[in-house]
Amino acid sequence: MVLSPAAMRLRSALVLASMLLAVGCDEKPLQDGKKPPAGLTRQQAAAVLARVGAKTITVGDFAAALERLDDIDRLRYQTPERRKELLQKMIDLELLAEEAKSRGLDKEPSVQLATRQILREAMLAKARAGARAPADVLPAEIAAYYEAHKKEFEEPQRRRIAAIVLADAAQADDVVAKAQKLDSPQKWGDLYFEKSLDAPKVREAHAPADLAGDLGLVGNGEDARAKNAGVPDEVAQAAFTLEKVGDVYAKAVRAGDRFYVVRLTGMSKGHVRTLAEAERGIRAAILQENAREREASLEADMRKRFPVRVDDAALVSVVLPRVEPDENADAVTPSPSVSAAGAARP
Image 1 (cartoon, rainbow, N blue to C red):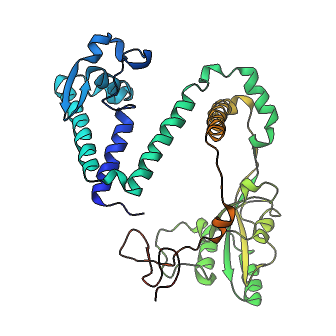
Image 2 (image 1 turned 90 degrees about the vertical axis):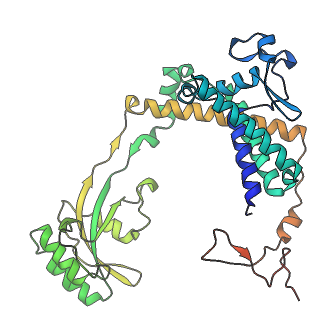
Image 3 (image 1 turned 180 degrees about the vertical axis):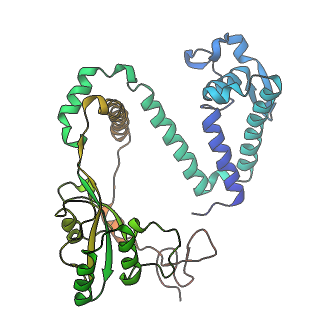
């Protein structure tokens, strides 16, 4: 959905609101037994800094906005001039929001969606607020996680390869024979640029010869993490039969309608990360899992309080409008021959 300029301004205002204010300026920080922010007394927090129409911005609102900034941003507002700047931003926020409401922009679906997204992020942030701190994760817990996920800390062995790609089997066999007699990366580069189908038409003068035809790192197929989606499995498997850097596979490797002359250009033996090496990552993983659990608990609670019913039959029957890309636009628009419901217009 493409936002109108006015709607985009309102969404920007909503985003600013999410950063500066968790509550509207009308909601006094004295309600519901809440303590005033920044060590203010209730009387100090209730003092009015500015009035925007029927709304007020209090000292408590302003202090709360400062508290919600990170430490670096908060330092920017130490002088009276910069604090006036922050207050002006809060005033502008109220002015834009009130004007947008008067024009009915708050009723636009795109604006309501943006509002719901901000509210969603606010709820998730509240759920994460009570999550565990890094210091709460004990060494014994980290060690237990390491033992339970030991396979994840094994770095698979990899090979780096280059290839000359050809379309003819007989030619490929001939190139294999020539490649096996080469005694330098420079000569491999020359052969690649002379024979390979994927060689650039123009060879750069200082292009590294040892990287000619480079296909990157590949795994032996035992670990999906080491798989290179751009390299056929047959080619990767051939690489793991080669013993040392510079070796060329004894025959052309067929993959689809292409033949690959494979050369080994690098080797990695693999590595098992120790507990000490993995500790920081494990701590972060435990904290992230705790945050996800809190979010999932919140969602489960919300589903109990607000029952969800899905009409699967209606979902399956939805017909999307046909779209045609417009190279001069940021978004695709429905074809004029199709209605929003997906039915052809007369």
